Amino acid sequence: MQRITAFAAATLALAFGLVVPAQAAPAPAYNCTSGYFCIYSDWNGGGTRCQWSQSKKANTADDCSFIQRGQNVRSVWNGTGHRVQYYTATNYNSRIGSTTAVSGGNLQGNYQIRSFKPQ
View 1 (tube, rainbow, N blue to C red):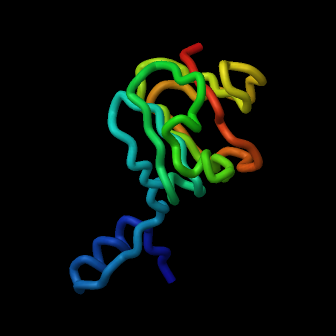
View 2: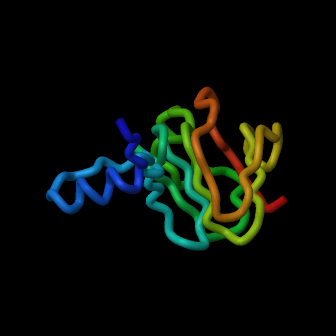
């Protein structure tokens, strides 16, 4: 019996109207305006979002509802053109991490980001 290559199998499936499932899982969808730094109360950009257009913020609790309620940050998206450093205390104290420009992802999820600034 001859082996059928993946390309040949896909071609046959298309010819007979069969659906071939996609192999790659979709990337998480972070709803963050270009040029902004965004934090989220849930994994993969879910839950409540807080976003800032300014390059630094000394106290995120000033205008972020879920930080005010004591919830932790579980994911971030950095839509800016520079690396952003973030801190667990206000006024840029207790650095916890950073995220490169135009990237993001899930965090450990057991702390709040209380301030941030460019690196």
